[in-house]
Length: 170
Image (cartoon, rainbow, N blue to C red; front, side):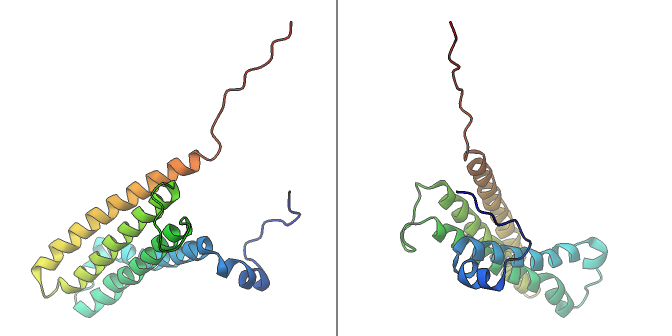
């Protein structure tokens, strides 16, 4: 059945309260959007001429590491919600569902990016933390890559192409 509603940028307050704020997929996307938007700040401040100007630890923490912490938390929440959304029960993993793997790999990536920022905050005082931050970024990035590739496959598998044999007229 087709709906006569047209696409809108923002839902009405009633639709937001009645439907969207109760939908795990919407909440996961909202968390991801907020996390990425805040995480972007640290990506921008990583530009060499900006990063080198952040000479005091407080400036570096405030402009570079804290946005990574907040963004990483958004990634964690998003990955957890996407994983739970595909499960029959919130506590029962669904490894047989492709979408579950997308959420699980993104959750692991969120853990990696969150740990990177926590280790980054410790790196000024502890040399080992810088190495751990780099390692966490490495495996967190690979986890996001696996999750993204799996999601790409899932999106392409929605409407498989089938060969239809045409009846030959005699």
